[in-house]
Length: 204
Picture 1 (cartoon, helix red, strand yellow):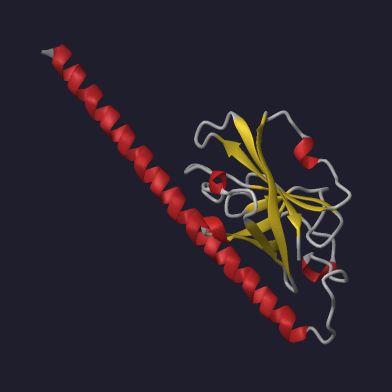
Picture 2: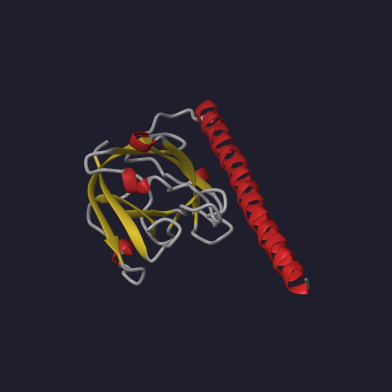
């Protein structure tokens, strides 16, 4: 009798634990969605303010793609990254700390900024626990278009290379002579033993 009670109680514990995991994941997902949408709205408000206050026209080459024209600090919203082929639109903040990646993609510090010569590297999560921002990144194909919206300009890129590398492979961060956009995330989804890397060249 006692053994049956133990089995029953153990079953209840497992059911309760499963329910907590499901509800926890749902809560995190909803929270991150709200934070993501708030970050996008915040950035679009900045774009509107810049448009209203800007008195001189600048070319994309003259633009400083950092808010206020100052050196970016961790957490600053730099861009909105759009990938139409996978219906993705996400804010990009400076830095790749856990706090930054909680509600946005993250721009790797010490890599190039959009509109500047070099390798602009952006990272993001793709799971329920840490964010689904790059969940569909594995669906991106060569020749797909990617856009980075700044306060003054939209930079266009075309995907040229897709590869999977070891987590210890830091070549993703290496500088380049041409304007390159590099996106990376963990793969396979939920297991995260490797890194999925998307490389795109600027075309506009």
